[in-house]
Length: 409
Image (cartoon, rainbow, N blue to C red; front, side):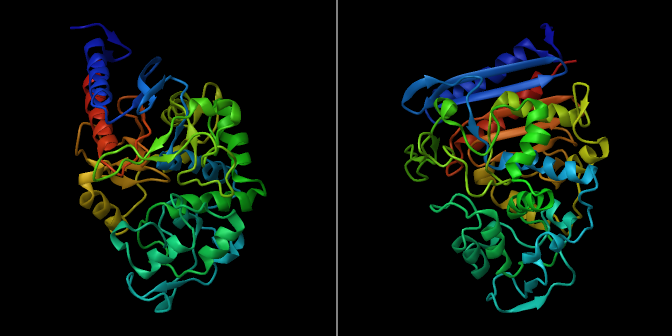
């Protein structure tokens, strides 16, 4: 038996490092920063370089574009408002978002945009927090009139043109019918951006200001925000979207003068954050501590329980299950967790090495952030190779496979 470190075996941690090094040595992952923690023990690996052709090494304080791993963090703003009774789960959102009153719903998801019926009921805060308000990035409906309209209106990130400021974004959103009846079906992403717009309307503050004052500041998340200030830009690697045919390292975003070099018009709760392993560790550890950060309470215990346990019925979850099951060639099992809470996946069945109850999410820029209450474990893996190829997904898969083997009590 090797000596244990807060419940990690030395041999196990070596295996984690070896598998990360194997991915970096393959030439397909320029560099990676990974963190695992249990109790008072935190272990960080920074391997490789920021750029695929060498240059500065990856460091513990390297700043990453968090992509969809923004979702489990930005949701905290809404939870603060629920705790303070500034929002109620079954409030109608139209009192703050009149653009979303009197919705019409497509008769069929692939039908023309004017072939609609009235919504059965108004959209509630609960619908938005569970990603069931009726619109989303439906990967099973690409090429349909509604998905084409979502892209044409600039309602999602990742397009050549940036998203418009929140009021204009909401106006455009309000011109579209819903894909599904409110509360009927989980749909990805747009709800997470909508939460930011809702929080800004409720509080009368920019979304980033509220997050900074109520979440990032109290947690000491000094490098987390919607852009990288000039004095930190040398810590931001390029973001690659490799060519799916050749694997060539195409740069999707340059650090200097790139998308994150200045404050965005739209602070996207769904995918806009930049951060570091230590900042994210502080946040996920707070969730594991049921809302406590040191002696300070950031969120109530029931708020954390709501976020980190499944909120979906089997019917609501059908689209999510299909997304996970039918994209395995890219996702390598990320997405097959069974459930969804507020802003994050929740494991409701055991399909791999992680136990039921693990919560968190992955990002298309090559990021993975989860915590596991059963083992008191936090794991964060950050790289900047986009999911146009499965390299990052395989790396993430291997990271979690080895992390769970390193646990020893």
